[in-house]
Image (tube, rainbow, N blue to C red):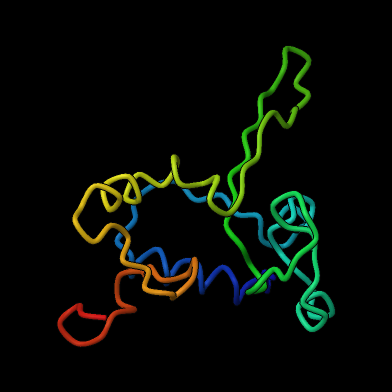
Length: 128
């Protein structure tokens, strides 16, 4: 998970590389990702068994995708109202909707759910 000052430097460098200009908030340095079942321990990864997407399964990598929604009530209490994981995120990741309309679709080709790469992770000339 998050490694204090080094983690902040890593996040700042990533933000710069991606060209992002929005306010950052982070779940680093706390148990948030663990509490919402999107971060897994080395023991869970070795056993290939953890709770993800509302079931026990092989979680794959140590960090997984997920969206959660919260609301703050009139007293200031924060309430968790919604979470989705895995393919449940598709409607929130708008690029998937566009890819689903093109002739080859997502063209995952057996590469599993982690086939999309971030800017700078593709080979020379931006090609995979």
